[in-house]
Length: 240
Ligand code: ATP
Image (tube, rainbow, N blue to C red; front, side):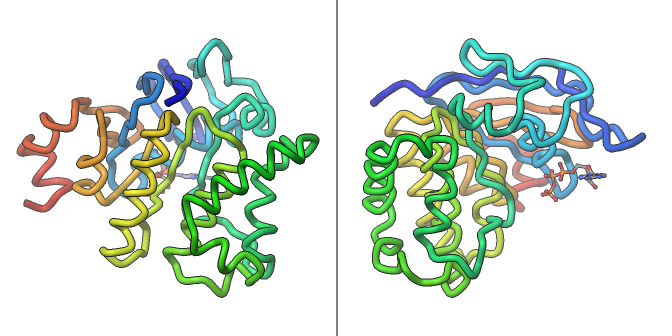
């Protein structure tokens, strides 16, 4: 497996107007790791991802991706540098075909037709159902299939690190299982993955490590085994 690129976030601060959404967040994902972010609605998970991908501007702190500093860069430069976000709620273009949605993810590589075709073949191999449905409008697919389009589109950006924001949202348990299996496969092929999830148990089961975020701050960090048996985590996030 090729080694993914690591991400080191230090003391990240983000304000929405006078509201401090991220208050000195530090976390890291080592090359090839699968790191989970746990937190309730509004804790700040999406804010971490939107700032890391250059969509929101950090107030302070640093985000190092391999040897690159991401703070101050534009979203397209960040994708071109190998860090790709699969956003919460999928954000597909429902009237456009599956294929057209997938190809949008390759925008920063638009000069490289052969490379994009290779990547498309990889995505179709990962999600055979998308090959079958490639000419259908993305909006006509089931929720789980649409999530696969969203992950496939992110893969077309050729990520060395992939940020996944609540990929299991609104999906039936069996479909959640399939989505998590695919995430695990992407990670095992070498891509660094950071996964934000409410579905704490399923996410922790495939994680190397996890962070817990509350009110814009990291309040806990640990490896899979220690968090799965942590009483506080079980009560607050697993419901056991
Ligand atoms: P969710 O699962 O609901 O996405 P989250 O952990 O990802 O939760 P964020 O979306 O990062 O949380 O939100 C963190 C806080 O910032 C919340 O209090 C939210 O209401 C607030 N917030 C998010 N986006 C904005 C915005 N554009 N303007 C103002 N406040 C915002």
